[in-house]
Image (cartoon, rainbow, N blue to C red):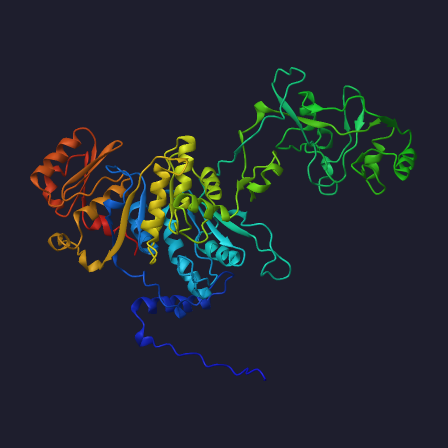
Length: 612
């Protein structure tokens, strides 16, 4: 049957049915299409709008029966609800405070059994991630990093999207092995057995690196400068690219001359090659020689060529020093270089550089872009910093050990997340995962804390999705990890369980506290916001006046500005700075001139931090 190539008429858009927000999106889309640029543009107007994207205000309620740790205060948070709502709430409470974000979002594969909706058209997938990643960007601290897992098929799309959201912040990517090679169901005899972790970071971020091994350092000659090791004295430029670093190197103690590799010239320039008046930023070869930092071969074989013709004869006979199988002299090299060899003792071998341990700038090696799977750990090169992780099946095994069954599909391996947490965090870092799934990221944070005594904190955001995923899998997993399971010792720690919901923003009218309070916005919801906004460990819910002591200060929530609350603030202000939040801030007018007291009027203090 012949293929019908007739063009299907495009469906007309009913502009009258579009909301104000949809019309704004359409206008922005049309403006973007008129601009010439290289990047990622997707048809946002064709989307079924994300139900979570609205102007509602987000609140959280503590579900005390699901907390881990009966009394608190709670260092860590598990937030149940749509992660777009959770991110908007966190924008109000944690903007600029998160040091590490890791997420493993849906991969746009079309599999229906993924815990998050995973049947996206490409434009829907991009928009779904875009609105969440833009909020996440605002949460990062000045030294913060975001790491995002993605499969091979969607890596480039995600890279373009993140380049747009995090311009200039791309660091690189890790490649992670997900399984052993297989040809089952694959095309072109190519095994898709790897994922990627894209890394974007603010200027102040650095990976921790891996402790260097000093096994190669020794001091056989009792050098007063201490232990050293021998390293290469050449680097990867040839004599055409670096002519000033292509020269015969003479040992001043013996007069013997060592040939320079035409394909790998000396690292350091020679004073003899510098033009008059020219200076270089690094030290010269002669300076290192004078400090006895060049290691010369012992008793080398040598030859003397009396004329330039003798040099060419030796070249033709290949009777010259070699580097591996490659001769260090050949026809075509500058004649001026060959003339410098005439009448000298030309030695076999290559000098090396004495690298002293005391001269090292740091005691760690940088992180490699490859994460080697644990089955190959014995093959690891000790000179390279390769992070070790296991295959994805390890994630399933860990869940089975905790629950006795598999409670979640496709969990990331704990070893991978543990290595990422080790590398990307400091002992007091705050870690966020807003696609938390079964809670592997939080498990890794608890494990690393138990390992090094750190006080890293986590915020995990997850949905229930009909599986009671957040309460029965994520929270229960962490509870068992904290307290111990099977033969595994508990890590210790705690978390508060919060349930996110929304309120129409008109329920928070400015200047009408009597309407706001009551059934609309509860005192305990406000107190939870204020504590987290100031970085306090979360205390149990408050039914009225509440206060918390911070490092160097205090916060007070006084719903009505009662006289007792004014007295409390006056007492606290004698010792430290106090920030007061109240619906009736005017009742604190008597403290207006107290330099230790700051009065914040609600709801302005909340809405000013809430994303528009």
